[in-house]
Image (cartoon, rainbow over all chains, first blue to last red; front, side, top):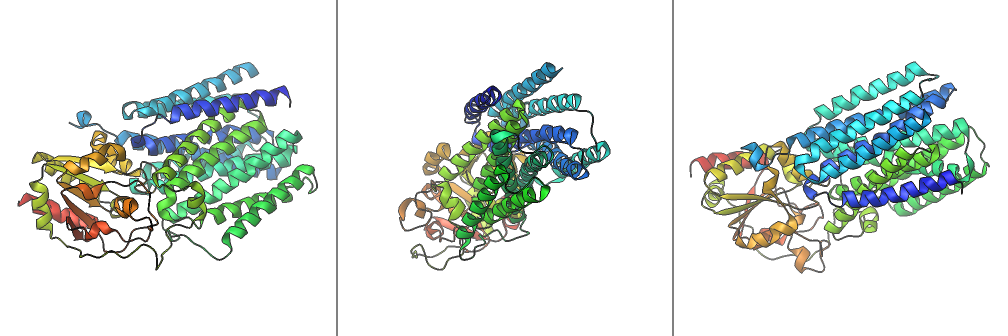
Length: 97
Length: 458
């Protein structure tokens, strides 16, 4: 196991623990926005898609990268916008009066 | 320059964590989402700074622009009642993107060592299953294909076979037995896509909250695996965060149904069945709108129990007006939210928020359950299985053991329902035969509109 891979494994395991800690405190009233916000966050694959797009040279590779960029952009933009729309609707008694 | 980019990625990870932290309260949640979006923008800017020479620049830019336009248009236009399928769809896009990245990288660079090969194959498998599985979930929720389980003999065997063949193909790919070209990788992806379709088809609509959560976790893990592949820490952190979130939601949802995940995935629950559950004796009392209006107007405490039927009838505005009218008469109105009411976690909360019902009138099951005994009227709108007392009392019922809302403890129960058809689980609900229960048959929206009129005349 190379040292790079070892560090990545550390990061992954620790991030899982932090994730569990952070998420388990989200109340059920916010479960839909939680899901759609995390949905948007996994749109981070757009970073991977762009990295691939910069490395491919063949036409086939470019098409695959373009497909990945399209899907990931859809995921990022759609995810954050939908979450914002949902959360914009949440009102407490005080604020609605 | 590389260090600066790595630090920017770290900043993104911090923003994601802070964003999720702010999702703990409805008051701060919106800013949390915006913080996460800002984090994403930083990561994208850093990526473009590091890689700005694209061989097919125009095509890539077009793809991004198209994603931007389609994504924001869909997100802005979608009705709140259609939110579950929208969430499923966006989730699938992420999975598909991860799979394409890993497959494309494999063909372009070849497998980079054992760890790289495992990361790539895992990403393609999980990402593809999440993509096609999410599409099937979308089609089911959109009712473009039927929501009930789609089953055929030997289905589980076919799924298992697909998985084994795909894993074997993965091993052969990693060993280099299948060559380097795009075809073997394409076949491997195709098998994974079929597996995703195969796994989600037999799962019924009412189990969708679990499936959507699980698919969410899978896309997260695919994103994390692509981080291992590209040696990119921000992908690993963000993917792990989403994986953890999806896993927690999956656990909470299956606990709220009191069924293990394996039963939800492979049980084909909710098929129309002829036998099952013992028949219950009693008569159904049907009420008039005027009866119900009088009952509600002179009640002191009312608890409204919304279910998926409310979303189907799109009656959330009428429910809000009913709440307003009752509040004007000094009736205490609260809402009881079952964790799996609807088609995704928190579905009812979103629906009622859209109609401007303040979130502090919405109560979780554990909090509201002791209150039913002191309640004059429990008004059930489009909820069925989550109110079924057989879950507490009849060991033979398929619902037995599922935590339910204790609607039957209220002094009066009014059920708004289209017909006497059983709920999703295909089980009769003894609540409807309870002497305290009155049924108001008809479409929820129409019934509520009449009820609002009748209330003015009480």
